[in-house]
Image 1 (cartoon, rainbow, N blue to C red):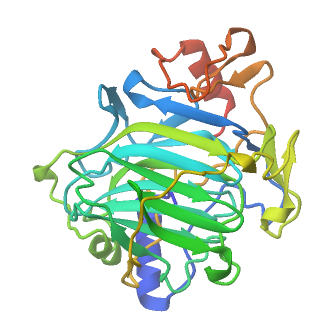
Image 2: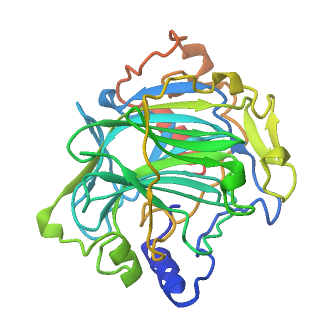
Length: 361
């Protein structure tokens, strides 16, 4: 989850003393009342970050940079936590991305799916280890025993681009590294009431868990402390493909239960695109991952916005999402071939200005 460095430190300290629930926060939690609907993706997009930025993702916590390798998230000094967050949500789906994790003791590269009621699915790479990725999940912001994380193999994750796949359905979550399934969590195997099952926003970036201002528990988990004189430290995301397994223009909570059966898809249906689920053949399945220390905090990207933001009810009138992940006026939308990869130029200023002034991130 994405929250302030101070809040993250408080969470780790509370864990060490009381094993308390997570100190996380949502700007509007649908399990506690009525909240704005989330903008639905409702389709598949394929984004090639080597061709530049797309306006369906917004930045915070620093300035990601774009180049021939993709989008780079650099931690050079205390407080740096550059990240991108989608303006859309998915309701079950498949995310595939190619990335290179950041090196450095105490440096954390993160890829997070998080909902407004604080369901969460994580992948996190600790810069002190080049050969593993941490997988984790949380439900409704409850961390409890902090025993859901595993360390799974991801050889040379800092030295080369690796393709990761996260597939999330009402029945199971599957984490894949390269061609190898490293972890599968069935609905029935999750801790009671903790299976993530509500519309998720996508967030990814890098931060310094080993910063001296963090709580000692966070620094130890991140295998810090961080020595900024050895940096800068950079995570690189080359490409990203997202398939929403549901359809419609927005997702809202029909009640405060936080169950997937209560989610309402405006103009579509939950699991309306479930036939788009992965049918790829997996060549290997890794052995069970190792358990983690009870000091592992909930996943996230450290400093930044501090909240899981609620989406708008739908795209602005007359605007549409393209298969390349760009939000454009419908009159200029170009239909691309299936599985097309983004060939985008710089962001159009008027689009950016409109979104900046009218969208909550």
